[in-house]
Length: 343
Image (cartoon, rainbow, N blue to C red; front, side, top):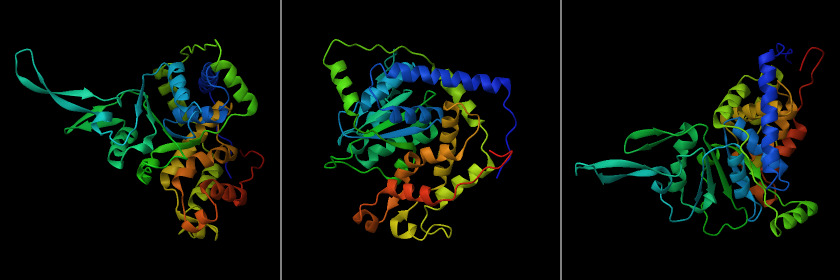
């Protein structure tokens, strides 16, 4: 139980309104070339507001690459795409030192930047490259910098890694290590469009339709909005709900339901708590609220937690995946009830 936070200042209300208006314009611009996929686009926007990275999973042909490129255009951010392949090397991502001749004829080492030096990096089919190359992104994703030859280079801000992977074609792939998966704020599932949406896709892509995306926000504004997200109040009862949710997914936790241990081999760590909270703050602002509710937590629980849960072999044999585990826990976990004067 927690009391209402102090009333927001006029400045806070103005910044929150500006944030909502800007991101509504972004969605409007992206919708000129992307039909449907509202849930995936919303999660991408929330991840960016929260300063996190996103792993997009869906079958080929669902416009995942176009979606990311369109967001970069609407946000006026630098964009690079890397097609991950089995022969991709770490230096192909980060860059490398090369020997060059100076004007005086002397040889000197010079650093040539790789495609990671951008603001939105699309790691296409990230699970098609070996773990050594996947790991080249770890420092960039966590520290927003790259270390080559003992020297550290800062990346431009804001910086986001938006990766894709194909869930059905696993031959020749390398599953992402748990440490790599945990760096992603969301694992977003990109589903098939509806019949009506698919019909519109046909109309747009087989005729003379051309959609031009105009930039509606700058990188500096995104950084400012990220700061706004961080100051959104988190009521105490919502924080306790997050702790109950995440800790209940750890099989060795005494408070976990009895069915968790047979279903969950490994549960989410503390980063899950941090990221579901900051993502929920972003969602609250996009929905016109200046505080987080348990509904925000429930809405984002699956994309935040599905890639942080390792089901047991028994659960997999029964067809029980991470989403089913999260759904059951959300259904059973007591939801804090607000009273008068309480959120």
